[in-house]
Image (cartoon, rainbow, N blue to C red; front, side):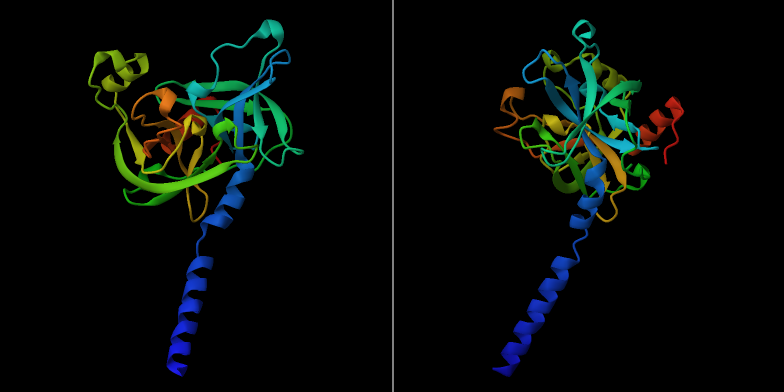
Length: 257
């Protein structure tokens, strides 16, 4: 009986140690203040605010990186529609900040915004060239816009492949201008075995150990149609390597760190 009790005690100690050793909870707490929703606000619309994607704060705390396809090409200036970001938090403390577009990289589906107000906690960019297949990463964002609330939601998964972004299409009817451009000049992206949704576009993909950003979620593999992506998620997502974020910051004259 004493031996059995000793073994049980050892098991409990090992179990509690392994649980407490998971760095992700602390990393999420560090990353979330730098994750924002991206959308527009129009006073005459109901609801006035419409958030369609995610972004994350970089550099001096006044710049936000997101996907180019998240940022509207035009705004309804006649009715004073504004580009905005949502600083996540409890419903009573959520803040909406006005933003404007600074630079866009359509080839890599990236956009850089500048926000008004005091600086926010900035996330650090890592060397995406060091990412290896099989490594575990996490991403935080707003997977279905504001449907799940005003706090970022986190998912994690491994890098299942580092692969060209241009995926062969069975039929030419699935090709668009961006896809044709990618077929002409393909570049590698990170394929993840993690479930993301349309609102996750622009979410930071970061190291679970330290929160350093290695990529930007930019799309989800759709099994059937865009209408069924919420009902039947594929569990396959893609992220743009952070090297292209650094290049965009250099182009805009914004220090990366």
